[in-house]
Image (cartoon, rainbow, N blue to C red):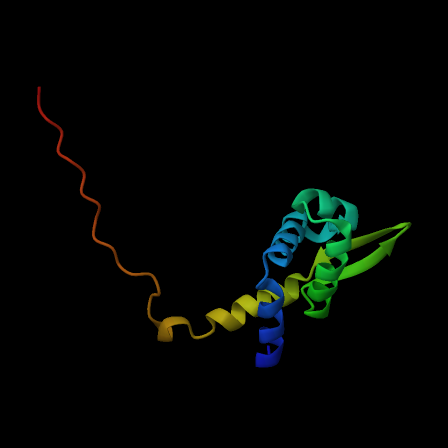
Length: 112
């Protein structure tokens, strides 16, 4: 994935409404959601929703298809996975990324 594509995708997700829309589409899976269902799930008014969906589509994070009189939007999982791959490529130089934590101490039980 090229850096300019990554920047476009991250910029699209760096807004509360678009992030909520994208998460709803990811939850819906490959079947996607009609625009009205997205509005219901996110509480975003239809007038604003179309703008945000256009931005996600432009960033190749969402795809629109006509299904009868409905427009169904789906998450572009290939783009999402490529973005995650780009962000985690060469993570921590091959070393474990999570800090090693000390064992959690539990209070000793009192004997009765």
